[in-house]
Structure formats: C-alpha cells, structure tokens
Length: 309
Image (cartoon, rainbow, N blue to C red; front, side, top):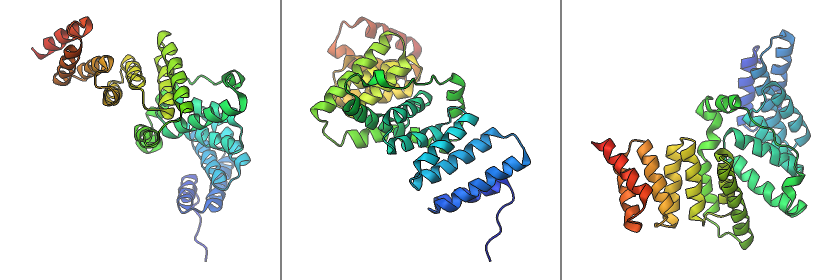
C-alpha cells in the first residue's frame, strides 16, 4: 500500500525535498506540483511559498536535463519574488546548458550584485566570460542584454536569510584558492586577469567599490598571481566597512609580495577598525621598516597608539 501523501503545502514541499535529496527528481517534481495546485485551490496569497515551489520544481527539471521548463519555472519564481538567489542561479545554469551565454551571464551577474562572493556565480561568470570572448570577440560586453540593478532591499533580504540558504557565499574564498591557485594560468588568462583588474581600478576611481570588487573577483578567477589585485580589493572592502574581508585579502597579497606597502597599510587600517590594535601596530612597524618616511603610516601609528592609552 502506497504511503499517504501529506495534505498540507508545507508537508508536500518537505516530502518533495526528501525525494530530491534521494535523487528521485520526477517524484519530487510531482510533489511540488501537488503543493502548487493546493495553493491555487485554497486561493491563499503566499508569494514566498509559491516562489520556492516553482524554484524547487525548476531544480528537478535541471537535474533531468529539461532546461526549457527549468527556465520557465525560475521565471515564474522570480515574478513572484524578484531577485531570489536560487532561481537566478538555476536559470543561469539552464541558459548555459542551452548555450545562451549572454542570458546566463546576466543572471550570474545579477546574483553577484546580491552577494559578490557566491562561488557558483563567480565560476559561472568565469566560464561565460571565456565563452563570450570566444564567440563575440573583444567587444562582447557591448552585445549583452541590460543587467538589472538589484535594489538594496533585495540584498538585505538575502543576507537576512538562514545560513543554509546562502551557504554558497561562504565557500567562495576556498574555491578561489583551491581551483585557481592549483593551476598555472595561461598567457591568455593572465591578460584577461589584467584587463579585469584595470576595469576594477576604473570603478574605484568612480567610487563604485561594490562593482570594483566584482571585477577584482573575476580577475582572480583567471589568475591569482597579482598581489595588487588582492590589495586593491581590500581597499574596496575597507570602503564598504568589510574589515574582516579586507584583512583576508591583504594577507593573500602579502603572501605573494611581503613588501606590498599598500597591503600592510590597509591591513593595519582594517585591524584598527576591528580594534585589534597590536596587530595594527605590527603591520605599521613592518611598513615603516620598508618606507620609514611614509606619512600616512606615521599618522596611523599615532592614532593607534592613542587607542592603546
């Protein structure tokens, strides 16, 4: 005798999730369909729940290689709750599988506006950049559809979700180190990294630190040999009060070039903001051994010493 199906939307979604985890994608899809029908029959307005169900069914379609229906369901999910991370990522994967690289690029780029450290989106941008350069040439960016601007409210909503919902972002730094650093970049990769870094530098000059971080992150996916790419990204993190991220980037920069004065100075600034004054002083001392007359470092030392009094 077949087990009785749940009679609630929440129960059907939970059963669908379990079937998905078990690799039973067709069964999971059917359960999500039942949950969607139940929502419609009840006539209850719950856009968040309905969006999740469409997104989950899209994941089933993607696993089964049904990219067209995956795109359709992701689009329905996004119509209900715009700028949701998972349907954007799933739709990007489906577009990529169908070789619709400009559309995939736009979705991956939209994700990075919401959270610029999502590993799967960074890797997707890396792949799409290569594909678009090869297929459309050096002016490929001019041939892209417009990329929507993500409102601050959507960014805040994503960051407020439970950690399991945005676990992708926590893997970004390790992905950057384990995938890119384990391979020797080709001459083409080094050149692409340089171009992206320069684009980041231009954005910094315009005060657009968030987009500059995206460019530096893209650059590091091609090559992690440039100490200045890390120290430049650290500058952006400092401007956005992301002090722990700044410390990490400066540390990576100093592994590549122990005399990177800007990395020492920026890490000292970040340590000061984090109230780790001893570490800040240690970096300032190292910097002043390299450049004894560095005025900003001397001033920062005075400020940190005041904090220690």
